[in-house]
Amino acid sequence: MNPIIRTQHLKKSFGRSFVLRDVNLEIPEKSICAIIGQSGTGKSVLIKTIIGMIKADSGKVWFRDKELTSLGKDELMNIRQAFGYSFQNAALFDSMTVGENLAFPLKEVLRLKDRKQIRDRVAQLLDWIELPGIESKQPDELSGGMRKRVGVARALIMHPEVLFFDEPTTGLDPVLSETINNLVMRVNRELDITCVMITHDIPAAFKICDKIFVLDNGVVVAHGSPKDVAGSNHPIVMDFIRISFEELRV
Image 1 (cartoon, rainbow, N blue to C red):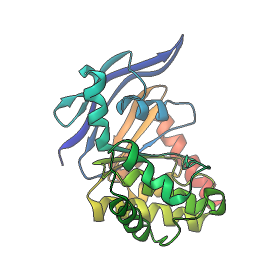
Image 2: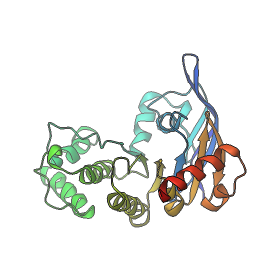
Image 3: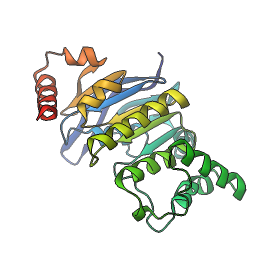
């Protein structure tokens, strides 16, 4: 599979704190990839730097054949429409209904005016995530799992080519976590969207991902298929995976 996203020598610091030291990775197109690592290793900063929410200090990011780090603001904003972002807490607007939340990017980014077209797209997507007919509900009326799925739906409504998931199963019980992981696989397989997850759910990452990157101290210390990463002899990788699976058994 050809890479849809590449980074080369990506670096980012905040003051004297180096978060990304030298990140090199390739995300294969139409794959499911996970970025794993201990808390504070720079996973969220990496994703936000890739999509241009945070400006890199140095290094390069490519989306297909476009070097994003060399683009001007307007051109970068256009390219970013190819990216969707599903936030850890869903980040729904509490003052809006579910339908209004999903319609927001259609109105504000795509500038769609046709109300029927907007309603149809919202209804179609809610049906696809198996939550039909909840357009009029407020976010605080939804369970945690429902909020997560609506957050994914809002990220999907712009038809992105790459969808980033920030801790998609955090705070969910094992049954709901499996529902969300199955949704990630559906996004990938049914919609042909490249999926990139930041996750602490290591067993799920090894189960559903094509490729895994282990980030430690601002550097990718292991990458490859789940089998490749499981066989890594890097001490940080070995400890992190061992502890993660031991916690699952407990």
